[in-house]
Figure: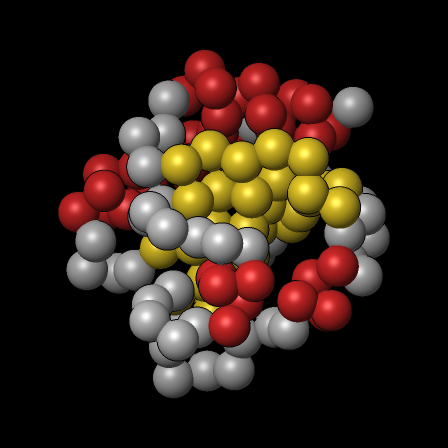
Length: 112
C-alpha cells in the first residue's frame, strides 16, 4: 500500500542516482527491498503505520537487487533497509527487523 507521499521505484523503471538523492531537500526515508522478500512484506504494516504519523516525510521505496547501483552506493546488504536522510545527508538506518518504536523514534529525529 502506498499513499501520495510514497514514490515506488520498480526494477523496470529507472532508479534515482545517488547524486539526485543527495540533493533532496528536507526529510526523506529511502526503503530498499524487494517485492518478493518475506521480511519486506512483514515490515510493510509497521512502515505504513509509522509514516502515517509523519506526512511531511518523503518516502522513496526502491526495488533493490543485484547490480542496482543506488542500493550498492548505500552498502545495502539486507532487506528491508530504511535510510533516513535530512537535506541529502544520511543520519540513521534501520535494517531487517523493523521495530515500530525504533521507526517512530527515527522519524521523530528526522522531523526535528
